[in-house]
Amino acid sequence: MEAVDALLSRVSAPRLTGSVPASLLADMVQAAQRAPDHAQLSPYRFLAITGDGRTALGELMVAARLADAPDTDVTTLDKLRLKPLRAPMIIVGIASPTPHPKVPEIEQLLTAGIALQNMSSMAWARGFGAIWRTGDLAYSKHLQAGLGLVAHEQITGFLYIGEVEGRLKTPSKPISAELLAHWP
Image 1 (cartoon, one colour):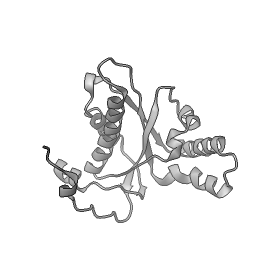
Image 2: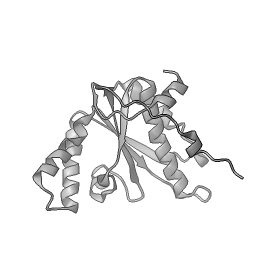
Image 3: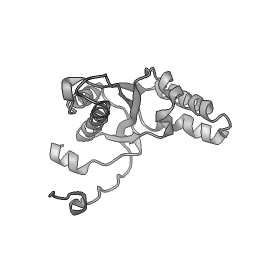
Image 4: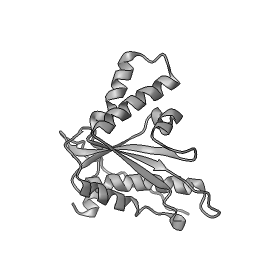
């Protein structure tokens, strides 16, 4: 897919199946490294979760929910347990900022988010679907610890990747007049 076409047609793909080839994952990591990165700090890292790791992530999500809300009903916990099985691969985006005299933490967090978005764009450009999810568990200290994050790190998102199953929504038409103003 041409770069311009990929950027202008990308949509989230909520139904994903199949598998993700290692070559795509390698391209996605390279794309992540092209995010704007003041002082070249690479303030991000990623976890790829596939196969049985998705089941383990579901159990970790349940444990995190119970740690925060012990009275959560069984139906909610069962749904939560199955969420990671919605795609063959999940990339956990992790912001890992480094103290720097010229690069504030917010710039590093933005870089980490852009890196994850670049991964999503690469997947789309290579013919795969993706959907970026967060939710309250992305901010759970229990979940973060279970995934091996250290105190200064935070999850930027869970990027579900796979082959697109079913129809996708048609990209909305741009409303550039409402999004762009000229100043002064």
